[in-house]
Image 1 (cartoon, rainbow, N blue to C red):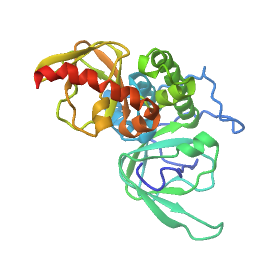
Image 2 (image 1 turned 90 degrees about the vertical axis):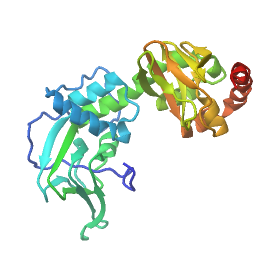
Image 3 (image 1 turned 30 degrees about the horizontal axis):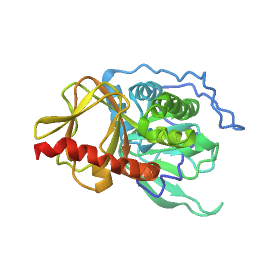
Length: 306
């Protein structure tokens, strides 16, 4: 959310005006464990509504890195709610039942620091912000009251679905990528915990044949693994390297803090997973010697085209 309240989330169950009624799904307050057989609800929606939800979800850090299947699950599960100016969306101290994505309008965050003290305005949410996750994940009371400061459109996700999606998606993501990462030669020296940490931060991207994954001369902020398909590196229009499943690329720009030395183009439909610059430095630091040694391969491959 990019605010001081990205770690102090809030929402509560209150009486509210809704465009649709929905059944609440309970989760035991005694445990944060999620039943992996839990089936998230599916609320029918028009295509234009699905497009609006997708835009709202893509702006939320909490859903960063979802693949296409996980994104569909989120879009199916949320429900539209509308509030008029001044209406309370969640109330400090009450139990949490929903997570919210704010599509349109603004909301004010008010906190009473003492039991009987007057509430203070501490933050304002805008379109694209989200709130309410920590109370759902950790069974904590709402930490603040959130009121609509204009007429608002929000997308609400019930507690059970939210926890199932977020917690099971993490487990499924690890399961999905653990075998793949274990077979990447670069990562052979890492233990299972280190590979799991990498799996948690991977972001999936999809490219059609002929599309550019990396563009020569552009700044580099990601490191890539090729999960499905084939690709090739080009410099000055000449192919200098070919990539298959399990190969990686993009590290030189991050290691040297330089622009991309070559373009990488998909030669078939591809699924790529990427690691951002910060995670690359944090999680792959122990592999930098190996990555630096590979620089000589690139230098040899590209030297004849300079």
